[in-house]
Length: 84
Image (cartoon, rainbow, N blue to C red; front, side, top):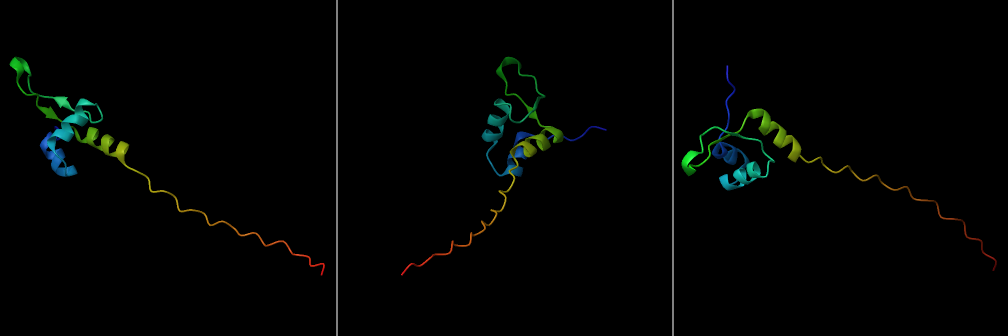
């Protein structure tokens, strides 16, 4: 059984961005896609994105929240000697 592949339009809807952005990610090889259509006679390429490639792309772009800052310990002030 074949796994379903996504079109750039479906991925754009998922990420809430324009299709041009998805095509730019494909062109820069950030997002791996398969050219399914024949690009003969100057026709538009038809890209298909596998679920595995989409997972890899999401994993590469996921950020890790910054760790909470560790509270600094206060030093006890040095005792002050009074000579007067």
